[in-house]
Image 1 (cartoon, rainbow, N blue to C red):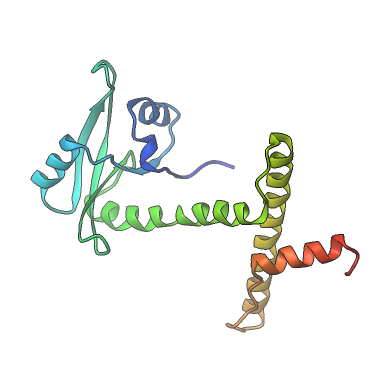
Image 2 (cartoon, rainbow, N blue to C red):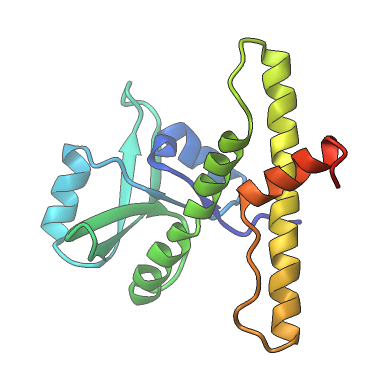
Length: 180
């Protein structure tokens, strides 16, 4: 399976990461770190659109060039710059990038839900085992919900059942305790 698009957080906004992703031929989107130089460029640009941009490492030796796509955020009431190497016209990018980037929050929610399932412990081995069980449970939860959604679509029902993670944990515990 080929990765179509990487949606990264601003921690990856570094010369090393950008050059690595470009070298691997991977398309990416990440918010720019709004340092003085980036903010000045966004303010000078003053509108939605795309512009070529580059950053340098802390030693001012290595450089990474990319396309900065500036999008208006209704929620924040300001222009938000994104770094990308996606090609295309400005209008398409301004419309596509925020929509694509919002998909990333499903990943954030996934890890938050997984963390709800397993307790904290001092032993790294036990924590890893809990995490692995939680990931299996999470994937099972997603599979059940996808199957239910597909089934309700076939029956032309729009109010399909949605199984919650607490319900999945309850069922697993009941099964492990011999009550199912």
